[in-house]
Amino acid sequence: MKILLLLLIIFSATVQPLFATSILRIDTVQLANDAELVFEGEVLATRSEQAGSGYIYTYVDFLVTDMVLGDAEAGGIITLRFTGGVVGDLTLDVGSDIPSLGERGIYFVEAQDAGLTNPLLGWSQGQFEIQDDGSLMAGNNQRVTGFDIVPTNTPGLSRGVAKGVITTLPGHSSNNSTANKTISPLTVDHFKRIIKSLKQ
Amino acid sequence: MKPGRLFRNLSLSLGLCYLPLGNSLAADSGLSWSEPSVSFHIGNLNGADNLWKTAFEEAALRWNDAATQFRFNTTREPGSGYCTNLGNNNVRFSTTNCGDAWGSTALGITTFWSNGSQLTKADISFNNSRDWNVYDGNLKSFAVDFRRVAAHEMGHAVGLAHSVATNVLMSTAANNTFLPALDDVNSLNDKYGSKTHILTIENFGDGKVIFTPKVAGTGVKALNTFHTSNYTSFLDCKEATCQIPVQDGLRLIMTAVPDSGAVFVSWEGTTTREDTVALSPMTSDRKLVANFTYLDGAEDPATSDVDPVTAQEFSTAGGGALQLYLLIWLLFISAIRGSRSYFS
View (cartoon, rainbow over the protein chains, first blue to last red):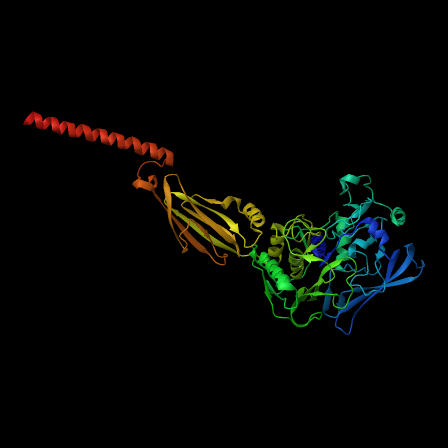
């Protein structure tokens, strides 16, 4: 039974959503300044629908627990539309990591009502999931351990995490030798304070 | 909980970032086509002088030149069913991604349709409002290399996820890599299986055959680097017979190199007369014979009864034998002459 469970875990762990996109890499300054809205929230509900065009969209309702930047009220509901989802046997995937039911995180919204394929700024670069231990998980599946303010206009495509966000695997040293100051995970409050301080 | 979320939580608890798939460092998307091939309709990939169509075709060729059995096909016919789950796999520039706004950061999006784990449709859209160009080498900040992004998106379109390896085409970040690298090839082979064919080389005479993989286009050197590192032990065939497992689709350049004092004569198994021959892609077992011979009628030690010696040793030994032979012959002639005068 244990072996079966282990095999199931290994099998499940190899299933990774596609990142079927080429997204420009942004940096921490852009993250704080180009987002229309930055909020801490929890996913209350998701629903996937097939539009008249045949496209599948997933609507995600967030309970806003704290507004970091932007005009919205804590305690309110924000609904974001992501392209992709599952309806019946049909799956549409454009590479978005669509927040799932119960997920808590800090979300950088590029535009709420612009009909974006992914409403988060820089896609997974604007998505930080809060873990049960209070740490933050970045889009590269690593914990956020620090911040580094970097100049803008850096060429290149997204690595899943904005440039300047320092991340590490649990128990490992920082991935950024130039700013290898904090190995322990950044707290949510500390993270939010940094974001606010970067807003110009 | 969706698989991606489950993966994240598991990866955290296990202390893993990605579990590599087979030989590659790419995570498995869990999706694949039913056959190891895909065809893209690029008729609507409009631009001056067919620049983008040609670049997309070149990107497909680069994948096809890699040592995998997967085939990326393209047709310049316009496809049907763009932005739906029906019809062809379409590629085009667009001001929107099927009606969705691109946003400030999206350059290209591959839209998949799947039923269970089987991919059924893949459309690739490129952001029309971006500055694109076509070039190899380092990524430039002012214009994105269309061909590189196309090759990356094509990898996604066949079910490849991002790789944690750096400097590979399927890396999470576009980089200076513009050709499929070993990790990319392994990803594709892990997913769709790989075939190998046996290349038999026979050296008849004294020489050897060296070979390097050949890839059409500008990426020869980079691809050679990884292919040769993959075939290090088979770069030289010095033995009388070598049998080399070669991955399906690989193109090889064979060069016959005679030993010192020998010359290359001919190939058997190919019509080329030159000592260097570029083989067509390996799609079945194949045999080549390289024929060598020695210059000036020098005896080939390989066919003599004496112990094998090196070419240099053979040259010295052969010269000494000749001198001894001439000395004996002169002494014999002198003796006969002496006998005649004595007897006459």
